[in-house]
Amino acid sequence: MIYDYKKLEKDLYCVKLTPTIIDVKSQTFITIKGEGDPNEEDFSVRVSLLFTISYGIKMHYKALNHEYRVYPLEGVWEGSDSPYLDKRKLKYTLQIRQPDLSPKSFLKK
Image 1: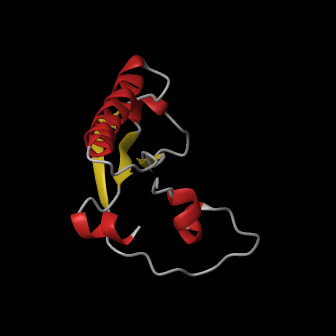
Image 2: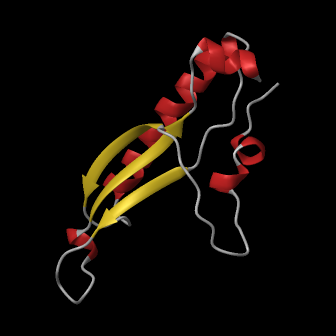
């Protein structure tokens, strides 16, 4: 059975019609920090690196018969104090969540 966050974690990853408060447990992410215009090549390289690492981990666990769907890319952005958006000055942390990879977590599914 494939662990599918879209089906098993609907409270976190599905769109709701009304705002709700949810309690989010501790999570593990692979992250990379950067600065600059997200339209530049450096940003694309960082995104590619995150997905390469995430899919590498997934393939390792798939070989052990523990399959899961890779989580989506997420980002935290910081701008400058300027009233105008200067993309060259953006700071960001890009991240992809990783599932609980402990043996107990796969036994439950």
